[in-house]
Image 1 (tube, rainbow, N blue to C red):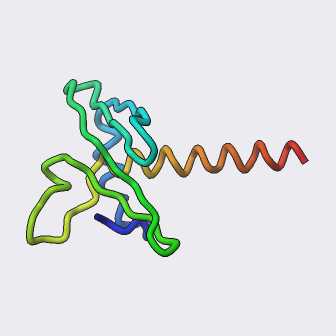
Image 2: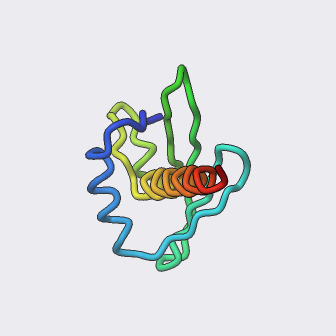
Image 3: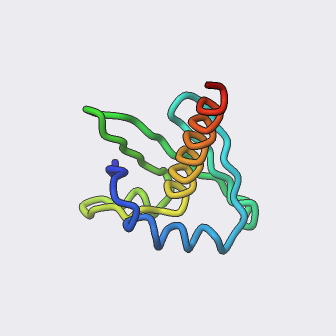
Length: 98
């Protein structure tokens, strides 16, 4: 599990993400399927909250390194960007409703 805290940890992953077309689908609560539409591959990303902090993990080879601190992969970055954008849209909609 990687703690989702500093945006700079996601910079390189976000750059890798822009090179190919990806789709995100919520598979079940806190589990997302990220599809690389260019390579026709899929990875599952799980998110969770512990003590008010956000964490995420991915089932791709980059996210499964044992004995090392796993890097932030492009799949986890995609889900984090997606969830932040969704939260921002909901906040704007709530502000307009008031």
